[in-house]
Amino acid sequence: MKKKMIVVDIDGVLAKFDELFDSYIKRILPHVDTPKKEEVHLRDRYGIDDDAIDMVFNKFVGDGMFQFCKPLPGIQKINYLHDPVIITVRPKEAAEDTYLWLAGNNLHYKKAIFTKDKSKYAKDTAVIFEDRGDYILPFAEAGVKCYLFDHPYNKDVKHKNITRIKGWNDVKTSDINKLCR
Image (cartoon, rainbow, N blue to C red; front, side):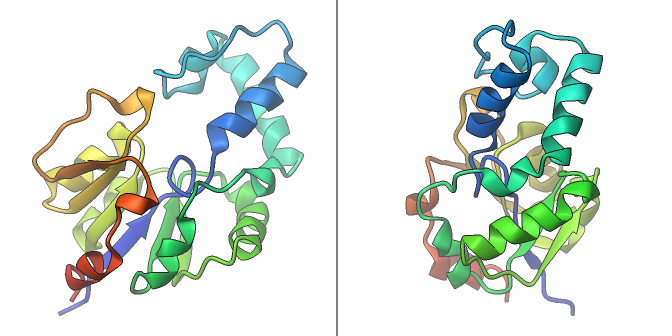
């Protein structure tokens, strides 16, 4: 029987993407209002249309900005997880910057997967660390042990398989590793 994975997201779980993107968009589009922290989708967060968001996001990727995200406190705990797999919806064009960021923060992982559909990995997952409700719910519904990083944009996400955590200090790696045997 194949051993199931420990899946770890990057943005909102390991990296402070929102903080960096908030300052970046303000430089590119100074007229943009203060971001609505309870909104997860960028167009809703900044109250601008999809074309404007796409333009700024593509520039963000092209400028290699993903490598400059600040880490969340305690992220080195993933180094104590058994062969964690990074699964992210970051575009493939950001792969090099992502690998630089992971290496620059001394994070060890089995592999990194760039995908638009995280849910296709649910059946192969024992545990997931995620911040987005729309990404974590398919895992919860598949019986995966889910750890949801608490953010204003995911306050309404609830499921019996989801444990809400404030950060990596709430994670006991020995308990997580037992779930993957």
